[in-house]
Length: 300
Image 1: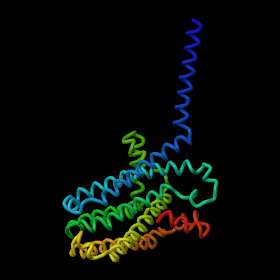
Image 2: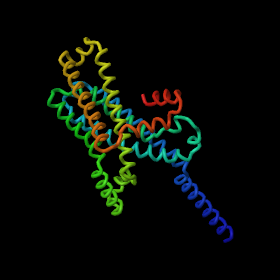
Image 3: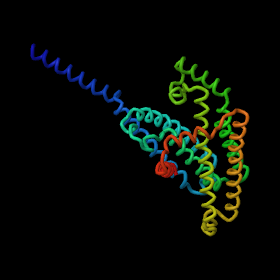
Image 4: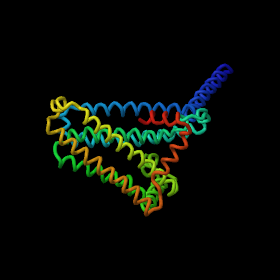
């Protein structure tokens, strides 16, 4: 009986040690950071995979299934962007008190969540500039999609910037949180920031989209200018080149006008400089010319 009791206590101790190990794995900051970082990497690899898949679609298939491909790409882009920005924000929180943050380097000061915004902006705009302009079969088809894109951009840049949106979105998030409704939405969207903090964040995202739009437009224009006409005609046809250049010109021109007007109107009417938060962020992480070169290489 004594041996059985000793054996029973030993088993209990073993179970307790296993439970403690499991708890340590779940709640230890280093372990959690490792798991979240691994999750970020896996989702990012998935994003790269489907991005190249969409970029290499058959031309005839892309033209015949234009809107199916467009909405599938857009849906995947939005979902993966929300997930990776959430994971990036959690990793940034862990890094604030970690060893690497105590080193005065540009990489240790970079914000992973903001870098994620930039990466997905480049994904989206390169796809919009290049693939959509090439595979839209008519002006009607292209303008329909571009109108939806432009309305969504106005919502992200202009509507979200208003006090009206901030007030009622915060009320909706508090209601969802208090009622425990749609916990996934609360995890992805709940924000405790003040209105000034909110405007700074919207300004940072707007500047990322602005630079992505302009740089991707410049890259695509350069590609069109240097592309061999014979090779282009073999794959797309002579008429497609003129049509695609026209699509690209409309997109780049309208977006430049939209962003510049937004910057000007907000500065004149709202007494707020949209560019300033981005400038302050760059100045905070770039103290030397070497830092400027490093951050430029990382982002481009």
